[in-house]
Length: 212
Image (cartoon, rainbow, N blue to C red):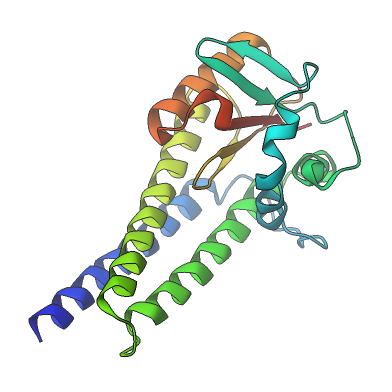
């Protein structure tokens, strides 16, 4: 009984943290646009996930990369359309309205809620063994940690003078979309420093996308 009670307390705390993080994010950004525009055929978050398997290929393109200390950070030009699924994030950002960032955060929140619901079903399943429960709890902690880091990174980037930014932290990489048509090397270095410090990811695993 003590183990079950402890497990339920942990789950409860994680859910509360998720709700608080989502609420703060919403309040901070609710005045960014007059209304939420409908999401197109493929959501920004889903497009963001499609990029994971293609990250390595883009890092070899000298046109799209800028040198930084400790490695290369991928900076994708919104005008450079290669036609691959890898550029779905770029095309979505280029064609989006002023509500893009708000829509992105909304979709990201929905995806995270689905992930947490699935993980909770494993934790609460009486047929789940101890190892499965421990792994699920670790995933919950990772998700909430990523959510906190994303919010911190976005606010720090805006504190540096950028209009807005959205961040998606994956297990092995981070995607950052910045509300600016073009980034100079100095600006890339500022963003990169923030992302590395708050996410713990290496330079080569960070992709920065300027949004027109």
